[in-house]
Length: 69
Image (cartoon, rainbow, N blue to C red; front, side):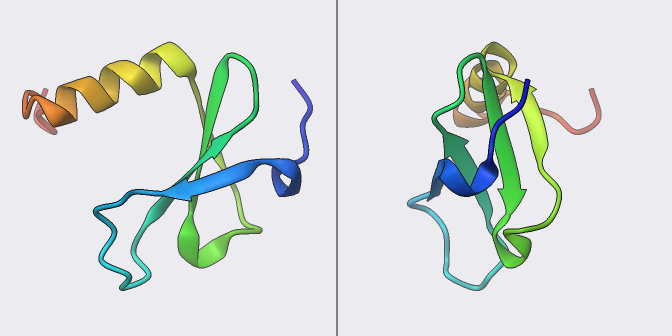
């Protein structure tokens, strides 16, 4: 899948403290969710299937995510 990251709408979490250590999530690509480091916007992206990203967020919000799992 080809897309131009500069053409996406990027959003930081409302919980971002503004200290530069944030992730941004790209919107506007079908079936995937691109994620980038806000300190290095033109740098590499991680791209997740949208369903996988949604499950991850649900687990984090429910506090059921464990780095040990």
